[in-house]
Image (cartoon, rainbow, N blue to C red):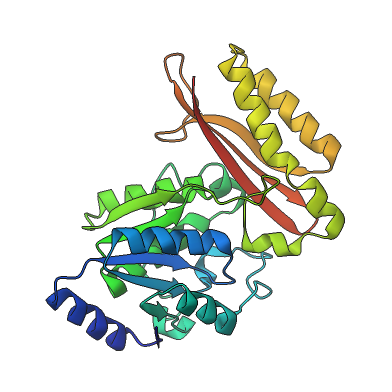
Amino acid sequence: MDLISEITALRAQVACWRLNGKKIALVPTMGNLHDGHLKLVAEAQLRGDRCVVTIFVNPLQFGEGEDFDSYPRTLDEDAEKLSQAGVDLLFAPAVEMVYPAGQAGQSQIEVPLISDILCGASRPGHFVGVATVVAKLFNFVQPDIALFGEKDFQQLLVIRRMTRDLCFPIEIVGVATDRETDGLARSSRNGYLTEDERQLAPALYAVLNAVAEKLQAGEDDLADVESSAINTLKEIGFELDYFTIRRVADLELPQQDDVELVILAAAYLGRARLIDNLTFTL
């Protein structure tokens, strides 16, 4: 596996692959890799001839008081995992490489409406940072296909819409959330959980499933179902950011004839902000 930190070297390698007719698959990450990331890698290898993984902790998507400085950076361990997984190229640029004019001087990309709700409401500017860095990574790597986990469901929709609106010739693939045996969605931030909090954390996914079962059984008072779920999670010990039922296509509130729905939740357990979701059909 090649480990590259310079854009010119990255582009030279990708250009060589393209001359040989290879299909390029990209997996963008912030590092501190776990089995969920490796699941994305495996899917990328099935769909492309060459797999590029990026590791970049993007300061532009962290708000004031968030965990940018303490976010785990484990490049050596990550590189070893990716090498063992058969990744062709790891691109790990410095902040100065990605933002040569500094963050304040960086042109930014905003995906309106869908970026301002849910995680976007509680983390202002977060999805501007996400859209901007993903667009830059797309331009650096110029992949044919890019893969993202469905755990960050809102992020996936933001990236899909940006890709469509800016006419990137890239197929965006969402990969199902990878979970621990007890249902907890794998996340780099799970490392913030204490032992006691780790025992409580799977309840978030359990409540998502219970809500989906209620709705599929015919319950139609969404506000009451949401309120009940929120109370249950608070009693367990979660501090809720949001818990909501939306339609899959655009995360708008469901209308009477909508059948493709998603339950989304964000909640704190101690230091850890956990997000999860569950899509289902009525």
